[in-house]
Length: 144
Image (cartoon, rainbow, N blue to C red):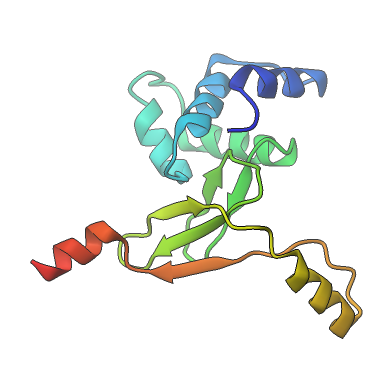
């Protein structure tokens, strides 16, 4: 985990963003979640503690955190974005059955970017690699 919640909050404060208990809760939840939650999942987890918080509040704050560079939005072609507070270089393995996303480390594929740049003339700004399959839980369930 790169930044702590406190470091992230300091970063936000320096850009003039007021820290509310709701923002703190959302950020803290994301930084401790290993599951790359959707806005709805964050809402379901936090609404018992924050009954006045709406899904819109969650979305607005997630946008704010993405723009501030504190979290990453993962869009994998399904209808709901997932959010990842781990900004380190890492890749994702995605279960086609249940949608679980698991982080795994692999040396960054910079040679792929260099090849793309050479062959296309593009000024490459980044890449995304996803591994698809069936997670161990789903495989076990299917085999029983």
